[in-house]
Image 1 (tube, one colour):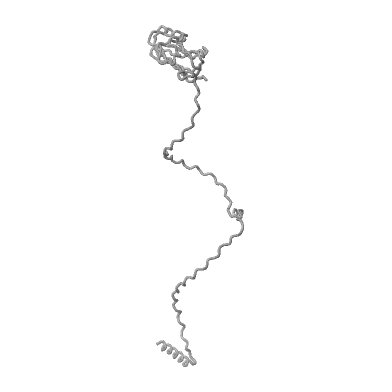
Image 2 (cartoon, helix red, strand yellow):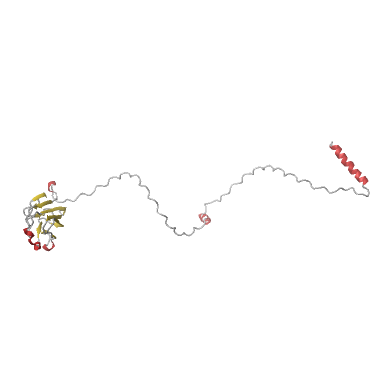
Length: 254
């Protein structure tokens, strides 16, 4: 059927040429055709061949060149503000005990060669008499609480040093009358013997005193009353109690 359409077109063209002598056989310009749809994407091309690896230069690497490639360090910035204090952490678990320490040095001998003759001395005696002690005389005592090893004589009121060293002495006096007592010793000049006073005429009070002395063998220590400013208190026969104590702090014996 396509042949008939082609033949018809040819006949029409021939008739136009024959009849067109001295006339016109041209037609009007036709309208542009409609734009066709875009074509489909073409197929992906084949993958290219792998390139050749880079060629390393022979010989050691120049460190200087590498350093030149690195930028210079910048200036140090200012110190920032201190941050807030953090919370205290929890107490950790208890650690394992440490290794035992090395033994300490041998102790220094305190004098005396036998175990039963070590350096110690202590006494505590009580005066129970109600009479007032005589001025500037050693106070005597009637009761022994401790006297090891009998360095104190209650009849004379003297403590006699047997072991040279530093001693501590103290006393307490309880009564309703005034009294002045001092701790005397051959290790001290008379003007340096410490004295203690309590002036009282109505209520029961306690007078106390203490001293530390360094004694040599044979030096004595005692307690004595002094000062006649106590008036008629020497005639008082009310209840009184004086406790005198002393003991060795440490020995000077080699």
